[in-house]
Length: 471
Image (tube, rainbow, N blue to C red; front, side, top):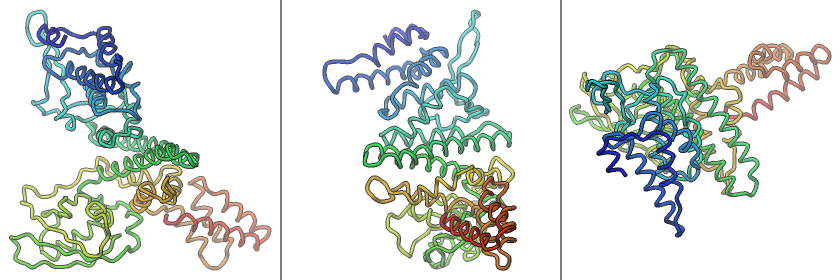
């Protein structure tokens, strides 16, 4: 069949695509293992019909097979072959619709040329290839199959497939062929809102799982991957720089554990190794600036290597950098400095937005209920009776978000000395806009009748706020 299609340069229309899908993806055999193996080979073959020159699958057939077949594949059982076929058809449908694009100046993007009746070049169709899929940018993410991509990202039991799916989900929301700050900000805000909705569902499922170990494991998996998505969006958009005026991560507002970093200077700087005193809540940016002063070299003209990996995000806390390279915490670490030529100096980072308030870190902090769900998961107990990766991930993202200002202002007002009722009024003004004013307003109303009651209510609110540590 492939020989006839390719050598005859025949095109597969939707009806024929359905027949081929039925033949290779829905046929079973008598043995237990053969159906899955046969099916995987069939999915690879369907993908080959699209990607192997000459392309045999029309645009209508790509969209039909994606929308009618591939999006209904069970995400939790997704195999590597199934994922590869889905990803290829998903991205090809995006390219065909113009919602996904290769770089505009890219002359190497693979093309299929259709000839017109006169034999001249007619329309051109850009094709996706595995080795160049990461170069594709998004103009519009209203894509057929996006919901299935979410399901695969959160539900598949294959970690390698999950990693690929999560990376593609992030790529679609960060590699944008759009020069519109409002669009980018709204896109990131909606993406984070969708992530938080799924995270809340996972947190509720963890509560409801009880002694059901299978349900608990699936709920933890979804929660952990949702947190990974939120962290990845923050890191991807702040990679290589820190926007002036951006709020500090909460963890950087108070000291962590003291550490010592042994700095290994580059060979062409004649100086011995030296140690820097630091702590786990210090920003990488601060460490970089301290090294710059010690070696008397501009901070954008060298890179930092830690445990064989380039340290790229200045907005990370040192504890996040350490966690990437060390399973066991110690108090002394080594960091290598590599000089860069002027041509390779770290460029000024393009964040895609002009205001710190539009950065994903700030957008996530301002999502309604974001701190509530992260704080709940930061104290969660998993199937094994410990917090596991979900608890650790939730704690890390709380430290990377800005301090929750509504809580901070209200705490300061309630802790202020003197007239408790006046303090409650100040606190009420601070939180009315956040829609959380009922408790403080009640205290203010009570103060007009009974000052003692106002004191009691203010203290109760203070205890409630303090229980929401660490935010």
